[in-house]
Length: 314
Image (cartoon, rainbow, N blue to C red; front, side, top):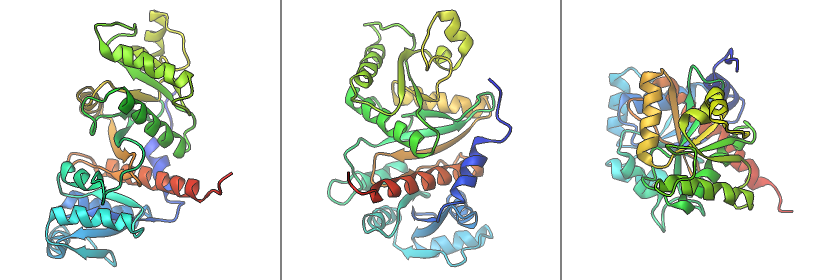
């Protein structure tokens, strides 16, 4: 397989720039990485930031790091918990169609997102997707779930797959090839993840999961290496050419994504799905380019969801 001449993130950012910028509530952007990412995304036309947090801290951060707030809207609240609560409320009221984590803990933001009466729950389980740009892989590599669901059960795994399929389709990348990972490619009673992988594939056969091509269990090598799949004698439309890697649990996914980032010079954009709107969930260790790619992915997907909701019922 030949490698692309331009990067996947460049293409996503360029596509997002063709869309009307969506309003994004940023919860507690009170450090340089989160505030600069929001403002750079604004300057590139990816989103319209609503900065939710202590106004004094936001302005002090901007002054300290020479960041131009311009006409960005600031919603003054006293602390990070109030920022999370207010940012979610802005989404619920329709004033924002995106949500972004600033300089607060992920748990603090997600606590407000999943609140039963005031949060952003939908009919799906919430899950996280890394959209990886790996220098040695010919297309974007989606890894899920490496940040939200620790030990997902079968039904949660089904929703994780449904979420990532919808994202892949919504980004205009077509029907995804989904590899359900385990340590081995045989169904083995002593490794429960292999049994769940087989069950998920049968759910897809029965129409309980639609929109993607599933195969599993697959070990990582025969999911992404055509040669490894050939040697193992695995014949499927997914083996060796996976676009989505569904991991058995958060620990495996987190280690896989960080291995690619720190040992293979990959970039990792991140987004949370399954809520009413896409949530941009970045880390302080993310590069500025990864943060912009996360914003671009969320903007494209939010536009896709808005189009879907605007379609008349048949």
